[in-house]
Image 1: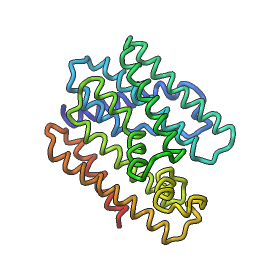
Image 2 (image 1 turned 60 degrees about the vertical axis):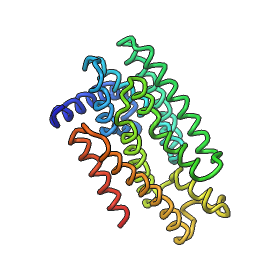
Image 3 (image 1 turned 30 degrees about the horizontal axis):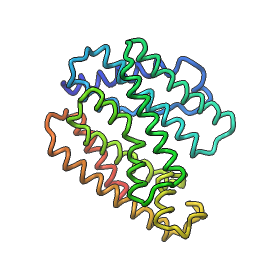
Image 4 (image 1 turned 30 degrees about the vertical axis):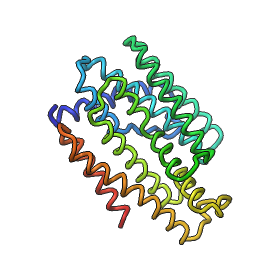
Length: 267
């Protein structure tokens, strides 16, 4: 598929998502959720390997995106300080998007994908419980659960349609993107569940100390640990992007952009 055609299809799906998102008043009162175009692009690349008609797979991709948006909204409620009304509306918005994915798939009578995405939601909620309760046995296990929260929807979706040729690259791209976002949050003084976990496992004597109250030395130490996972993920992405074939230039450009973002944070 030509570059401009991928862009056109990504924009088409974005508009489909937005048409469902903005029917009601919720986003006059709470922050509008982000639509991750990288995710849309990955799902498009995966579905281009199938014989499913474009009109149908656009609905299927839209549903997967609505599930992810619902999960992301609930995450924001968990770790942001907001007024009670805004928190309540955010919870309702997350539930609203969960309902939209059912509706979208019901319109094309795709009960099998409904079950697959419902299974993904269940798994992600289990990983989230483990993350927020800090139940993992060690830091690597914590990071594995953290990665699953970010990548389970796209993993389940691609495996459902048996379009897994690029799945490892997709998963690692989303994981690195999330690691970089959490580093940005921490650098700006915002709460980060990732850095809470890093503190719990690497500074056990500081468990009761808020992240913002840690010494500069301890904060730098947490950043160094995070950078080690970022560097490891970046290495996997570069190796995987060289191994696979047939990736469109637009996605290779997204990988390059992500790598440049890594360089910016590392300086």
